[in-house]
Structures are given as structure tokens and as C-alpha cells.
Length: 199
Image (cartoon, rainbow, N blue to C red; front, side, top):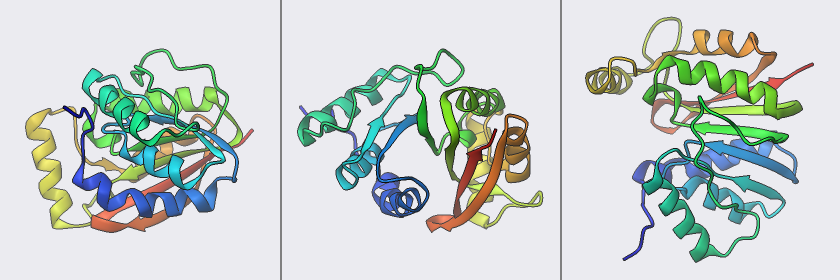
């Protein structure tokens, strides 16, 4: 039986995410993806960009099994075996050209966001990119009724979770040397947030 998991959300947003990453990253880059989930984003990006070395990771064993199964079926040299990385734990040495976090910050405690910023700053090359994707509140307000309902659902599951204020996330990043480079409107009321590490 196949261990390959399929995420409808990943199927919908993987190409728009790749489009943004293609604009902000060079043709040759080493990328660490945290909380990779099913592994479909890494697969899609590694297939499209043979010059990218994509390092997926996830603390969940079932997710890593799915990533490995997708990797084996695709036979891509530039898609690495997944790491059992917890964002708040010990990271691989790097350095990386980019750290990618898709749909992570709202489905985790705030401490995960803090660790993501701190560890990314330590592991990225100067000028490297921290790419965030997901829903955000802007100026203290939800950008769509669907996001407000999603936020309520998240907090019902775990009160430490929830759609974050973009300004608070950017402020946390700036404390670690990141500069907000761009915000890109994405499908289903999500945002791509591009943060670049400066000396």
C-alpha cells in the first residue's frame, strides 16, 4: 500500500508557490523546507527546478514516510531524504539559500515562530530568504470571513494556535536581521511573505 499522502491544499497552491519562489531564488539554490507535510511541495519544486537542492523535513513519522514514498517514485537526485526536524529543536548545519515554511505558523504555538526566525537567521547565507506561506491578519483584522472561521477552528483545536498578525510576525523576523522584501497575494486569501536576511 502506498504511503504517499495527498493534500488537496498542496495540489491547489503548489504552482503559485513555485512561481513566487522562482522569482526570488537563483537557478541554483539549497533549500530547507520545514514542516513539509505530505511532501508534495518539495516534489513539485524539485521536479521543476533541477538546479535546486530541496531538503524536506517534518517531525511527524507518517509525513516523513509520505515524503520518502514520493521521493522514491519520482527518482529525483535533487530531492533529499526527509529529516526528523522539530523547528524548536536542533537544525541541520546549512548554510541554506532559503528556508521555506508553508502553513506552519498558524498551526503551531507562537514559540515555533520565534524559533523559526532565530534558527533561520543562523542557518541562512547572508542575503538568503525566509519564505512564509499562509493566512494572516492585517492591521489587526482578518482579510476574509473564511480566514476568521478558520482561525476560530484552529483555536478550538488548540488555544495556542491561530491566524497570526502579519505585523507581529514581521517584527519578530526583523529582530533577527530580516527585512520584509515583498508580500504577494495568493489563492484562497493566503499570502506569500518574503523575508531576506541582511548583515
